[in-house]
Length: 155
Image (cartoon, rainbow, N blue to C red; front, top):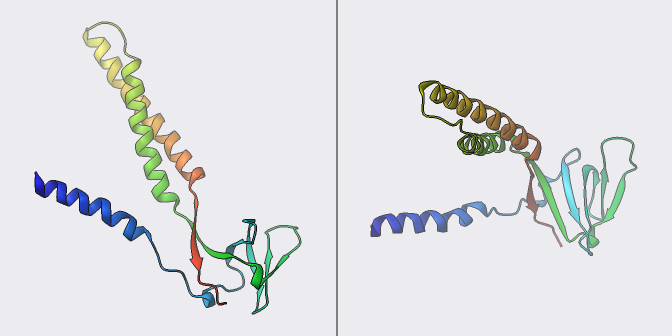
């Protein structure tokens, strides 16, 4: 029992430590990459780097929006997009949806104890599990958050 508690404590303690990543170097930001800029008053703007020099950063959005220029000293935080991890979120959503479907099937039981009711219950469970899995996977695909990595600003 003490070994199990020690293993659990190590796993729980290691999780936040592994989640922390060191800031990326400033030269990792290049034109064409997606970044998020946080200004002095916590205003966040995301876009694609058009131009970057020592004094300013110019972001453009996809589409017809005009480019936005930011003064380098006014930037409080700069983050580089790591994309979206859709596969992981789809798997998590499908798993949660399957479990939710199985739980829902327990509340939708037919009355009776005959053989036919057991067959209907089995088919109902499978149907709810499949539909829950599909809905969960779709929710995971569309709801996957964008991952951002901090960039070390040279000051």
